[in-house]
Image 1 (cartoon, one colour):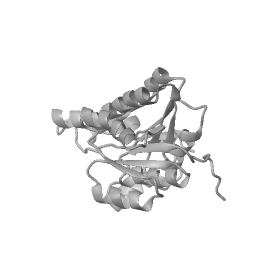
Image 2 (tube, one colour; image 1 turned 90 degrees about the vertical axis):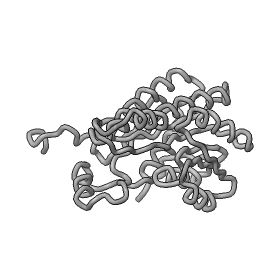
Image 3 (cartoon, one colour; image 1 turned 135 degrees about the vertical axis):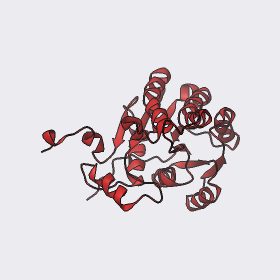
Amino acid sequence: MTMEISASLTGRTILVTGGGHRVGGEICRHLSGLGARVLVHYHRSDTAARALAAALPPGALLFQADLGSAQGAKDLLVSCTAAGATPDGIVHAAASFLKRSLSETTAEQWDEVFALNLRALFLLAQEFARQRGESGGDIVAIGDSGGLELWTGYVAHSVAKAAVIPLVKILAKALAPKFRVNGVIPGPVLPPTGTSEGDLAAMRERTLLKRLGSPVDVARAVAFLLTSEFMTGSWIEVTGGANLWRGTTRSDES
């Protein structure tokens, strides 16, 4: 038996950054299924984004922008408004996933990762607050368990995602009471293409539920936050219990 935890999003217009594919695409499909008009942002995933938009109900719109550029992040919401589709909610799912160790990471790569994962959220929130004013709205940021575990093989990515956590709390305080700002931290829900069976088995073992999740698990958490009117400055970990597994030893496992 399943229980629907999300209220209807009918009448809402939600911009999903990085919505062209993967987790962002599933968020678009789920929110649309709950009645929202979805604005799908993409950067390079043109083919996937167009296919997704064609499968969504009428009213869905596509917006291409490079959110790694400060001007691109500032202009995205302006473009939405110019198209007659000012959003009342933003889901920032756009992210890079750069696999580089400390010694491998260049200054340019560091800046690029922080620009998309962190600065873009800050600039989007600024413009969103300016546009919506007293009308308010919702922002949901998509984090990453790497921001909690701090993976040494993904140095810039992990540090940027770790920094998103306090940024959400600061935005929640700065934009209250008209705006609500929350976040979702996915765990092992969509491993990178080419992940070995051994690595997949290890991911499953590191969860309390001993299985991988699905992008729809993240999408449901996003919908919950968009409709939970007494939540702000909060993070939901969608990790299958991997957040409780961290740091356990044989002596404290039962």
